[in-house]
Amino acid sequence: MRRYLAVGIDSYLCLLSVGLLVRSCLNSGGAGHAVALLVVQLVTLSFANQVLLTLAVRASAGKLIMGVRVIRLPDAGRPGFRLLVRRWLYGLLWLPRRPWHRLHGPAAGPDRAPGRPSEAPEDLAGVRQVRRSDLRAYRAALRGPTG
Image (cartoon, rainbow, N blue to C red):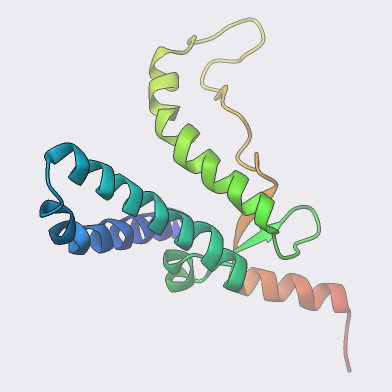
């Protein structure tokens, strides 16, 4: 549930920021130009939040608020720039089409059981979202007993 709330907070913050910038776009001349400026601003803010902020502090703004961190698989290390860009592009281009594919995909086939999703795995980009407390407990378990 934390992940979904973090995504909602990220989306809200991005749309709020772009909404505050709308005034500068409205006086730019022409509706097409204004829409293009808004899209560029939205994509830029999304990239800054999802890639650059995550690269710096292991979480986007919404994930920081919800106590979620992004880790690299399988070693739970800090994800690199390429992985974060791949994850951002995956979320930007593929995830919005998931409902469409689910509605128009085959209901069941010989290689797929009914009710089982046919989408790619959740960790397509090689990163995972975990709670900050779970990450601390994992690192403490790796260090072994102290004492």
